[in-house]
Amino acid sequence: MKTIKKVVAFCLALMLFAGSFSAVAVENEKVYHDYGTYVLLGDSVASGYRDFNYRDTEFKFAPDSYSDFVSKDLGVELIPMACPGFRTVEMRHIFEDDYVVEDDYLFYGPASSADELEAKIPEIRKAVSEAGLITLGIGGNDWGKYLVWVVTDIMEKRKLAEDYVLKLRDFLKNASLEDDVIDKMVELADIMNALPELVEVVPEAVVYSFSTYLKNWDYMIQDIYDLNPDVTLLVIGMYDTSARLEEDLAESKTAYIKHGISKAIISAANKPMIEGAEKFGYIYVDTNGALFETNHPTVEGHRYIADRILEALPDARFDFDDVPMRATYYKAAEYMCINGIMKGITETNFGPDEPLTKDVLTSALSKINGKDETSESTDAVSKFDFALSLLKSADKTDVIRFLRLLVFCVEIVFSGNGNITRAEAAQLLYEYAKGLA
Image (cartoon, rainbow, N blue to C red):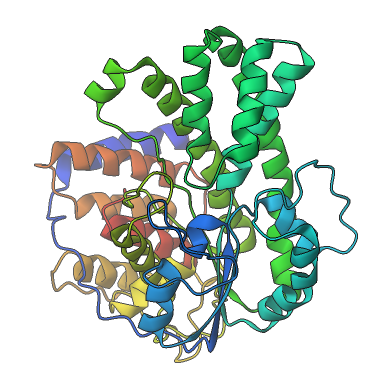
């Protein structure tokens, strides 16, 4: 009965409340921490490899790469430990003495020999253990050439399109980083009338690749934190290199198939990265929108990724003893405090577990919406009252945005009873202020 009354009251509030929702706090210029050293980990995209102008980027500095831009903008020492061809398998092998590699392609992708790469392991571990900042850009090879290897092995085992498999193996033996292996796999299948067999096998290969990649991901992240528990770690998401205009896809059967495969792969590949940010507390960086050549970013693409990294880094002005950098609500609390929307309960404590009070909520919503309202009440705020307060400040003339806010508020109300904490409020107000509701 109480639930029904709440729903009725909530619906009545929708008809009665109005206000403005247009103004958002203006962010101040960020102040960065002094990280000292920045270690770059990952594959060819991370290393700054070029599709059209070859340059050796194995563990080397690459001008006009995102690591170059980030290190210069932060004024830190860059230690390049990225290597074209690296996968999650190689990363685990580098970090774990007892890791049993059940993979026939260990160190298959890099130009250096296996012995040369084995000799590099102590240097990589040392760099990671001493880093102030690490970016990890990995996964493309788990899904690119590796996926084609798996497809080829499955088809050979089942004796499907044998001439096609032989041709595909010959291609893989000589394929370079400039080659789009998935595109070639589909194109070759079309030419040799092997598309039905390829389409039959691809889902199984994707599942196999994903399960291997997913199994490695958490171990790899934990390995980094075991070596350096206090490091600021950013994981660089993958982008879709098959992106094309709809009319281009409609005109080409192979382009359409490749786009479908690639889109599914990127979505699946980024999922554990995003979920891992919640689990481990690292920072996930979305790179969708970066410009690329064939497989690797252009200079503009690297600048775009660097800017996303710099945006994601924490602000040095936000420094509370009770808000660890790996807390899930860190970014939200940082935004609230840097922009003067919320304050700490003391100079050194934010009070994440303390209940939100009505005066703090009224003040925060007032500042977000460019108003000047205060409350004298220090009573704790329930999730129901919090949702109603958000609706009261909403602009009902923007129907789409208001409906999104309504759904958001319903989720808040039914996410559980009790008072809302300052950490919860910071996260919800952040989404509200940034227009994500």
